[in-house]
Length: 360
Image (cartoon, rainbow, N blue to C red):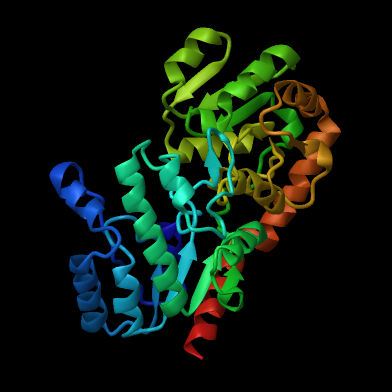
């Protein structure tokens, strides 16, 4: 998303100065992680970038963990600062608002010690303690120094307000994606249904496959992605097409030829680009009914949302994919929603408006 925003702004004539940090492996990474609550070295690097370039505004997308919240204070003392909250890490050290693949709000609006108690970061008490300290420092430092917070959905805005982010400084700035071009045929002309994502429990691919074997729709399910469940799922479901790691260009091409996308996530998500790419391709999405997902997939009927972990509920809802009318209608509605909200032109207008409000 950061790379797409940089390209979008550059194409519009803005001078964009990239500044990237890397979470290193081994001992160097361990030292970075230990310094994640307040990394003075990272702050000095950020200071040098701002002073050397004379940037008019800074937009921070991620401080975890190499940068640390120290860069927020350093940068904001020299230029107005905008920060996008792509996930929930400043209030949940797991970043997902989930525990054991179920929603968890224990740390929202609280001290965050539940994350340490349940070892929510890397299943380690020590690592969770450091992550908690970093999240606490990020939240307090950002509240003091960030001029505007960009959040992806109304759901995220409510969560962050409850966790202490000033409501009057938050603005909803959804993600966007490039237009893949026109479809050569309507979704109903295709027979492939795509799952695109990491093959892991939190993405719900195991729930989907169990439901698929129950429903047995007269369609092809293609699974794009890799992950810890890959070999187990391949063995258990030999009739399913597992495509493995697939280049982004090929995924976009498959979306333009597919009938639908299935999105059985077991956690809230931030705002998945898979959803936006499906919308851009004019595809319907059968998805878990979490609030941020519903807020992204605007304009479709209730039949396109499913209780996340309910296998038989998924099996029942999969039947909608066999209806040509339902598929084409939902695909058209999501394409309209994409054009108004998640297309590059809409994204550029929002970003420029956000920066203008800060500079003024």
